[in-house]
Image (tube, rainbow, N blue to C red; front, side, top):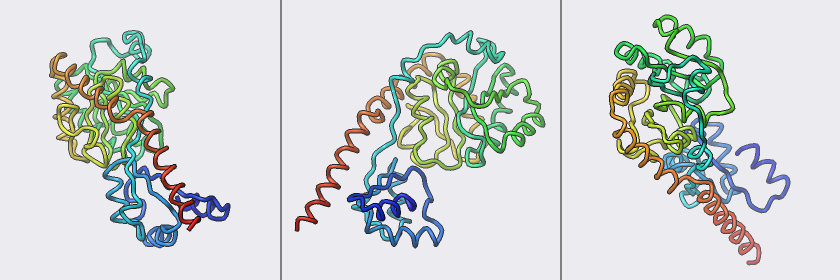
Length: 286
């Protein structure tokens, strides 16, 4: 936003709009000063969730509530809902038995993703269900640290880290549960993608995630940095019946199609763009 706004001002762009995807973007004094200076130049701040909208109003100096518009993140729902996969063959490519309960996590190996708590939680699952597997579709600076944790916990045969992949949708379809252990998020696309793919979701209760999963009818939420609660949630899904999980994923999938499609987001963006431009030209005419 800072760099883009400054460039747009020098380029004499008529209307400036900022799209904010995360929390705590204006906590430091220098960022507060920058936003205070630029606030009057920016017509609207788009927040990807209500939580992000509240954060902008509270922490972006000089930004008024009327400048903030919530437009939820969106995904290609059809891609994740309609992708087909040979589940058995897909799992076999990484040596995962067809009958193993497979948890999958998607995202970079970074502190904010809370993976050390997820690995610790998973150890309690393996203690009761030795065939369970945890698959990380991720890469990043903490790989070696997390690999050491896996080794120390004796989970070498249960945790897989193949790195980045180009077929996340297929791996979601081949898994039994999606897990997000983040310490902070705005409105993560990975959760929406898992819901659209028809995979049960367990996530930490941070950022805009409770807006996507308002109660346990759509998935399970646990406190961040709480391995015990995460472990209990994972065990709950492992022991749930197919019919129970099917009811949850159907509700979650329906929710994504009703609220988080690209068509919905595009319509809201177009409405905002036209509104901001008309307001600008009206003032210039006056």
